[in-house]
Each structure stands twice: as structure tokens, then as C-alpha cells.
Length: 489
Image (cartoon, rainbow, N blue to C red; front, side, top):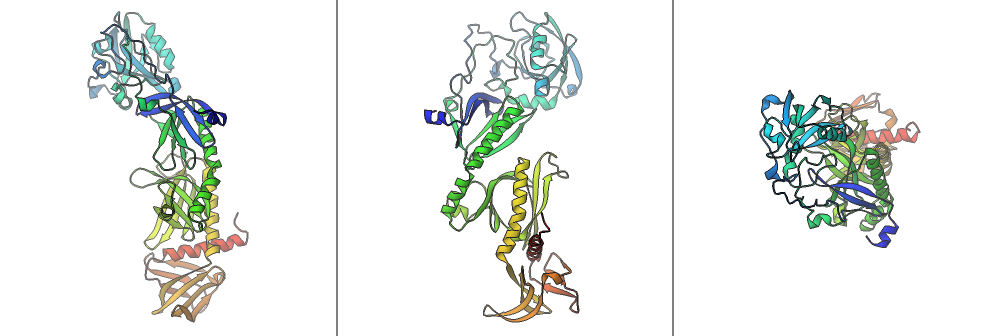
């Protein structure tokens, strides 16, 4: 890192970077005004000193790890196993977990040929409930390590095999560093693999339009993980802090850094496409009925909500969103924790419903914080009203009483049915202000019914296609008119 970058560092600290499913390395994280850099530097994974004893097993070396198949009959059944310690290698196991990790004390590795392996009665994924009568169910990792060390030659272990936990250790046989809650193996070590050269290089993520999100990493239930993705979705880092407070602090700092760069991003987009008016820009996660949820970059303009897979970097990509929701045909139908959804109650989401020619579409989006939810909710409602004021009038072809004509809906002048000739209004068949509308309904296929009271009673319009688009537009005009009267907060 050069001196200039060091001078403007906003935040620095030690974190852990995930490099494979169960492998983490310590990194120095540095946050500047526009970049997050993680640097493994020297000694991120220090090799242990070589041991001349060739019979010693290497922690994490597959040939020296035992992986006996587990009988189905022992799952969740309490067992008592007697282990006779050897002079060299002790019990011959490694453990993970502990109260501070909200996990039981679990056997994560069994070393071939050593004491635990020779019993043929212990398995990776066994929870150690007690050792020589000493209860470990509420023990911290360190307390469990000490209890196992203090035993004599004969050790009585009370264990229970937890199938769900064993899946977490399936890849523990691959060479790599131990997790922070891993105990050192009770066996001499010859050495451990050092990091590949590419992992020793610093990794940087520009803050400009990056996405930072809090993550979970089962089976560890502590909320101390976060992920940062670059704006083009090509680079990401999955990081772990020592505790939830530190993770939140980094999350907040990265969010704030990205927010400070937002005006610059809006200017860049405007210079690429001068006519565009970007009201808001941010990452949201679309909840999909089938398949995994997907992050999308949402851009709110004066007339549309546009969704992109990554930050547009050219005029062509701005003009080609993966999805476009015209605000005048869109309404917010839900905002808050998804109580009735299968999602966690703590997840914050908002729902949009759009009237299209294919019918009504519903989309649900998740955000990471209450502040984001409030911002999107407010701006979407305001955006729908502003779009209605901006557009003022829409027209659509229809049939009334068997006659082909055009329906015009105007925010101020209300409803007009007229015929056209060469694009010019020829004769007005019916005109009614919004104030006279008592009720509107539709059949969801092609018919719309408008009741203005009086002698005409209900008029029936055949729109030749799904009426939902025009129904939603009428709703947007009405909502904007109510807002004008100051009746909406």
C-alpha cells in the first residue's frame, strides 16, 4: 500500500477472508474513500516448524485422517466410549465448537492409527457431552480443550452423533488452515501447507456502487459475516469479523463510503445518457418463487424503475435493463418484515404490483436495513405520484357499444371517449370528470367497467387486451390527486 493510500485510510483492522468453503486466512483490511483492500501480507498462515518424526500425522492431510462410515443406528443416540490414551499423540482428535460459537463441542478430525481411531467407536461429527463425568454441554472451546488435556490414561467420553454437523466437516480432510475455534491436533505435526502465491496478493474492491450485505455461515449462528461485491459482480470478498459488533461496524463504514460516491455515479450515468433523471440507485435482492434469489441494481428514474444485473457502463447498457417497471402502472403493496412469507421475519422486504398486458405481476424485493426499506418505500410512492403528474394523460384503443373509439384518461380532465381521424380527435362520445367516478372494475381479460352514476349508469369498454395496465394508471392518477389535496403523508 502506498503512502498516499495509507494517509487517507478511513478504517483499518484485522478480519478473516474465506478462500474455500472451510478455509479462512487472516487479512489486514483497509478502507479508503473509494476502495476496500484486504491484504494477507506475511504470516497469514504460518507454516509450523518441521518435525523429524515421520510417524506423526499432519493435521488436515487426508492419508492420516480416519473417515469410517457412520452406522445409521447411532444418530442422535447417546453413547459411552472408553479411550486409552497413547504415549504419543494423546487422544488423536481435533475439536471444534464451544458455547461462544453457539455450537456443541464436536469432533472435527480423527487421526489414523491413534487412540480415538483405535476404538472404532468415534466419528467426525460426534458431540462430546462429557469427559470422565465432567459436563461439556455448556463448555467454551478452551474449557473443553483443558478438560481433555487433564485426563489420565483412561478417558470415558459420553458422545452423541449429530448428522447435520458432520456435513460441515466433510471437506475438512482437504489441506488447509484450521478455523479459529479449531483446537490444535493432539499429535505431532510435520508442517502445514503454505498459501498459494495468488492468495498472498492484496485484493481490492472499488466502493463505487459496490454491494455490501450481511451474511450467515452455518453452522455458526453468530452474525459476524459480510460480503462485498464489486459493481460489475466480477470481484467479491467474503469476510468474518471477531464478533457481530465489529462486523456491523465494517458494514456501516463500507455502506457510508459507497453512499458518498453515489452523486458521482449519478453524474457519470447522466453524462452517458443526458436525458436520464436518476432519483435513486441501489442494490436490492429479488425474491424468486423458484430458484435462488438474485441481486439486482435498481435505478429509479422520473418515470421508471429499471433493474440491471450490474452497474451500466455505457449508453447501450443503460438502455437495456433486464426489467423495466413503468411507475405509472406500478404500486407498492407491502413494506416491512415478511411475516407471512417463508423468509425469516427479520428480513425486510417490499412488494410491487404492476398492471401489464399479460395481467398483474407481483415482485418482492429484499433489502438489508430498515433505512434502505424506508428510502425505497418513500421514493417509490413519491415516484408513482410524480410520474402521474409528469405523464398527465394516457390513451388506449377500445370499443364502446360496438363502436371503435379511443379512451383518454387525463389527471385533470378525467375520462374522454372519442373517435380519431388521421390522428386528430374528431368527435367526443362521452366525457366525465374523476369526481363522478363511483366505481371501476374489470374481468381481468379485456373488459373494463366504469360507473359514473346518472342515466348512463355503468359503461362497458372492450379494451381488446388485458385491462390491468389502464386500471393501474387510473389508480395512480387518483392517488396523485389525493396527494395534491394533502390527504397523504
